[in-house]
Image (cartoon, rainbow, N blue to C red; front, side, top):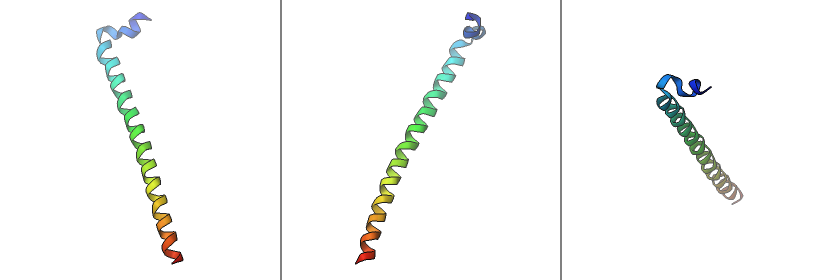
Amino acid sequence: MADFFAMGGYAAYVWGAYGLALVVLTGLVVATLARRRSSQRSLEALEQLRGRRGRA
C-alpha cells in the first residue's frame, strides 16, 4: 500500500495535482452557488418592481 501512495517517487506531483484540482473545483462550486444566490435576489427584486408597476 505504501508503494501505491508513493507512486514511484512522483507522489508529491501526483497528490499535489489532485489537491490543486480539488481546490479549484471546490472554488468553482462555491462561486457558482454565490452567483446563483445573487441572481436569484436580483430576479426577485425585478419581479417585485414589475408587480408594483403593473398595479399602478
